[in-house]
Image (spheres, rainbow, N blue to C red):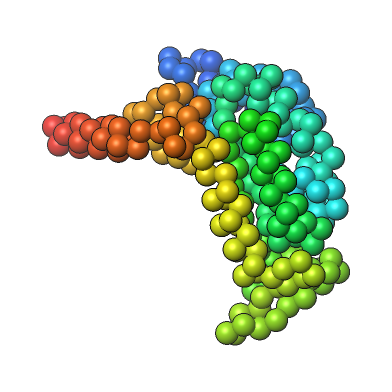
Length: 239
């Protein structure tokens, strides 16, 4: 997480200004720490951040507490539009990560989240089905370890332990994820990994980060990427 240490953000920004070129990069960043340390917000504009992933997970107060992210349920809806439109002036494109399948939100609730994001003109977001780690894994969260305490039960399906609750199960959450993502496909813009990938091919991310998917010239992107790779390979062969 890029902003886990405030002092690191200071030093990184200082280093970026000493370079003979402008950095352009993407990163995982915690929105709650930007909120807690507002002086770092402008630093990310200065040090070359172009796109970011925010793991918000849920705007629902109870679900965000359950996931160990109570800030998301309390402050994210107030902060994210202000950050993107007013503080970052749309110069940095956030991708918001959200989870389908939590107990206090059914499909209609999640569709309202989609509508809120569209209405507030946030650039892009990704839905993920809830994953509860039951296999041997050293990185299990408190939620993974004590899912039953939060109303989850488990059933065996073809030898796999599958979660379910009063709202849905893993399979339905997977269906919800696809439905929610497809519902807003024409309203969203490139996700953060696409901006990072295309920038490595010499494509200026500023020329595409503000375009919704239907308006993007995919042929131009592919042709530009192929031309960059051809030139790169030719330079390597000439060494």
